[in-house]
Image (tube, rainbow, N blue to C red; front, side):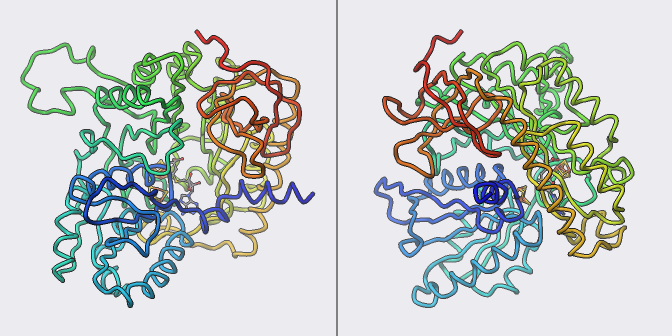
Length: 492
Ligand code: SAH
Ligand code: SF4
Ligand code: F3S
C-alpha cells in the first residue's frame, strides 16, 4: 500500500508541479559571467531554457548550477495553474534574501508568467529586473546589459514568425541519450480553460530541414532518442510558400512542398533506425490515420501517444471548446488500437471540476478511462486563469473540496488502470533504451520501452544508451522490472 501511495504521488501532476523544476548544470568554458536558470512548467519551457542558455553563451555567459555563484538568475515560469505561479512567487522571495547581500545580481522572469503579467511583474515583485516573454529571448543580452546599468526592462512582444530555428540549443540537464526538439511554437486552439494561447501566441511551425539537421546532429553526438515537441503536433504544417512569403512569386507545385506532421515524423525516423522518435502532444481533433500508419511503418517511432481527453463528457468538452466529443475521442482510440494494436501506450490529461460539471458528467470521465485503459495520466483540478474564455464566460462554481474529491477518484481510477495495463506486460519481451540510474538503487538502471513505460533492470554490464532486450518480471502501477536477455540486439 505504501508503494501505491508513492506511485499515485508521482502521477498526480498537481502535486508534482509544486516541486518540479529543473536547474542549469555547470558549464565552464571560461566565460567571464555566469547565469543560473530555473525552469518550471512543460517540456517546451525546458526546451526554451536551452535556447536561452545558447543565446546567453554567445554573449559571454557560462551556466552554473549554484545560484549563489550567478551574476544573472533567470526563472523560466509557467502560468498553467494558479499553483504554478504561486511557486514562482515564493521562489522570488527566496532570491530576495540572496540579492540583499549581492545587489549587483540581475534577476529575470522569463516564460509564460512574464508574458501574462508583463510590466505588472516589475511593480509587484521589486527584485525583478527584466521580464521577457517566450518570443523575445533574442533580446535578453540587451535587456541584461541595461539592467546591469540600472535600467529595468520588459519585452513581451509575441511574434508570428519566431521559431529560433537557427539557434542550436545548449543541452542542459542532459543525460546525453534523450533530447527534446521543438517543432512548433504557440497554439491556435482556444480551449476555454487554457492560458497558453495568450502566453505563447499564434501557432507557427519550424522549418523541417532545421529539425532534421538538429536530429542528425544529436545522433552524431551519441543521442539515441528525440522527442518532437509542440502543443498540438498534429497541426504541424510547413511549406516554403507559407513560411517564406518572399518565395510566393515562384510558380512551384504548391501541394508537393507542404510538409505535414506525418511527413515530418517520417523524415526524422529516417535519420537512423537506431534513433528513437517520440512526440508530444497529440490533439484528439487533429491526429490522423496517416500519422498512425507512419508510426506503424517505422520500428524506431515509439508506439506511444499522449492524447489528452480533459473530460469524458460531451457537454463539458463543448464548454471547454475542445472541438471534439466523447464519441469522436473514442473513435480515435479505436483507430489507434486497430492500426497499432493493444501494446501502443496511451496517456491523457484530465481536469476535474470544470465549471458546471455535474456528478454524472464526472462519472463519464471515469467510464471513459475504463474504456480507453490509459497507461498513465496527468490529472488536475480546474484552476481558473484570468483572461481565458472560461474565466470570462463561466462561473468557477465547483467547490474546492468537490474538485479535490473528484480528482482523487480520477487518480484512484488511473492507479488501478496503470496497474492493470502494467500486468499485461508481465512475461513479455521488450526492447528498452537505457537512459539513467534508478532513483532507488545504484545497482539498477532505468530504461523505457517503446510504450514509454519505465523499466528497471540490474546495472551490471550495461551503460547509458544501450538498447536492451528484457523480459518483464514484476510491476507496480508506475514501474516495470525486467531481466536482461540481450544487450544491443540487431535492429533493422
Ligand atoms: N497542448 C496540450 C496541453 C498543454 S497544458 C493539450 O492540448 O493537450 C497541459 C495540461 O494542463 C492540459 O492538458 C490540461 O489538462 C491542464 N490544464 C490546462 N489549463 C488548466 C487549468 N486552467 N486548470 C487545470 N488544468 C489545466
Ligand atoms: Fe491549451 Fe488547448 Fe492549446 Fe493545449 S490545445 S495548449 S489545452 S489551448
Ligand atoms: Fe506552462 Fe507555458 Fe508550458 S503556461 S505548461 S510553461 S506553455
